Amino acid sequence: TAESVQTAVIVFNDWTSQEISLYDEGEFVEVEWTVGPIPIDDNIGKEIIIRYDTDIDSQSKYYTDANGREVLERTRDYRPTWNYTVVENVSG
Image 1 (spheres, rainbow, N blue to C red):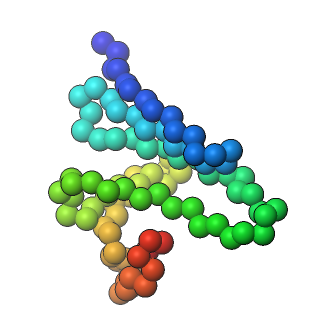
Image 2 (spheres, rainbow, N blue to C red; image 1 turned 135 degrees about the horizontal axis):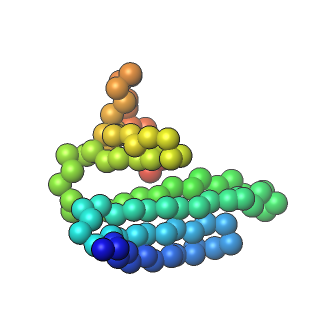
């Protein structure tokens, strides 16, 4: 049987959008976001972030896709090769 999927496409403006997919029986959410080209002709600097707020008990672990090459496990506010200190809460 074919797997069903529900997808929402959110277009924020001409240069940012997000696609969220939920698969039947899946225990995960797939998020694909697109940014660019970022307009620079207005001479206003831009920092593009994505922020998730949830009540999922994940012990601060999450997974990212490195451009389709591999899935990486990450831990919020932790770097395995150096002591990480949060200086900027949003971009950190």
